[in-house]
Length: 256
Image 1 (cartoon, rainbow, N blue to C red):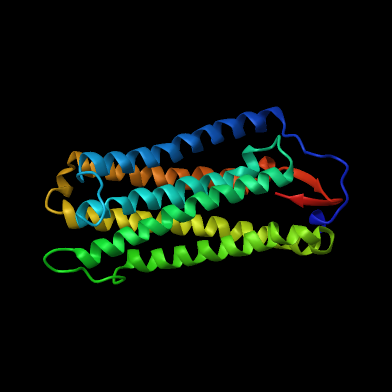
Image 2 (image 1 turned 90 degrees about the horizontal axis):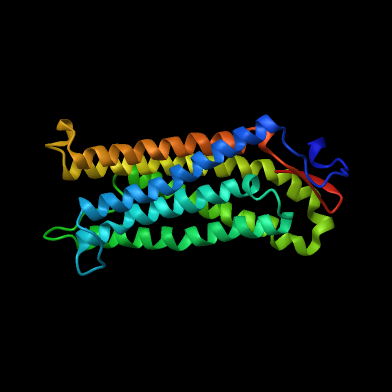
């Protein structure tokens, strides 16, 4: 824990040329994968699942669920995780604000996505579908719970406690690695939950033709692979010390 409390004079630790080149390539790849995952899930729902609606058509309402969950848990949460690596030129308070804004944008996506799937189950004709019976739904509940807990703890610890900055600096510095570890764990769970959900959906809808590799099956498989690739790339970017930056914050060095 010494590195979180040592005095520093540098505002930012610069990466070497090779590390910067590798970081830039990985960041570009992460952006392609994050945007690609949203594009693929939207294309899947538009081309093969009939588009979107609300309660007037439960089947089309369900399509909002995968799109919004990928947008919230993968796109916005993924960008939130990358904020502390990508926004190196900004001061620490700005980075915290951007990180929080990404999570704030994810929350309504997740909330509406949950409403959509519950409505779909409850309004399904001729027989409603039971809620929360599958492995996918159980994993989803755990993921939503962890994400909510992460947001509350992060907001309280890294924003609210800034009102008494000096008194809480040591506590916040000690919480950084815990918050970071739970963040990547939640992202792992989000990707795993998406994969179980995609598998469940194709087995319900194209079970008889899936083994013959129809176009829809290829799109869903490509989406799953894109999610896994995004997880791997973002994990590398956020876990490698060489891509981290140290910023002086109130005289206390905070490792990001």
